[in-house]
Image (cartoon, rainbow, N blue to C red; front, side, top):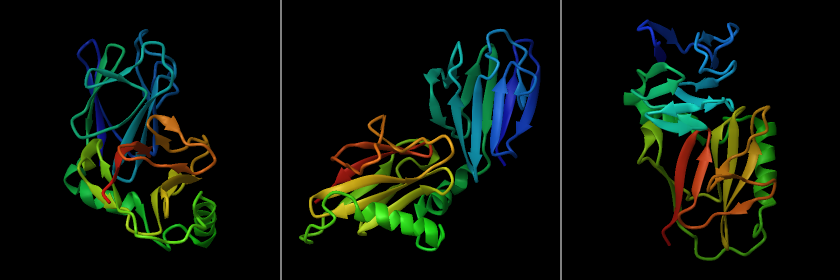
Length: 230
């Protein structure tokens, strides 16, 4: 189980196990983690934990949120990361670091049957509507995604199927389709906030977007680089 170890400006220390999916951090007492610090916004940040992965998001705070000394908006947390909020230092600890590869397989690559018939019908419909869907098949293109952030950095996923579905149902899901003229990514699911996967830092539109060699795809807090190899 992951946990946060909070050290305040007066030298006090406390631990908070991440047993909830959403943990709020801020100055107001109704936060899960309340920080008595005028440099902290009322609703400052939130930590989202899905299975063994945790993601930190700044809630447009006045003074910002730091991870390992750098200001962030959203950030996938890795074991040992140091979070700075106001005058407070928060250390993130995860006991699942050794099993990161298994977690990637379980939570990022969605296989047939994992999402339910209705959701998979939506995936197939979105994939079929991508540009180039009716082009005749030629020599298969080769491509892959390589994780470049978090505990799964270096992990590669070969895109060797007509379409590959990645993400987490209820959080963010995208399908990458292989067509005669290239690879396209399309948003096929998400959460109540309506956020979509990002390519090169920008949310993808409702239409499928063609991927170019070297593009960065960001999904459920994980950054991946798309590369063409043939």
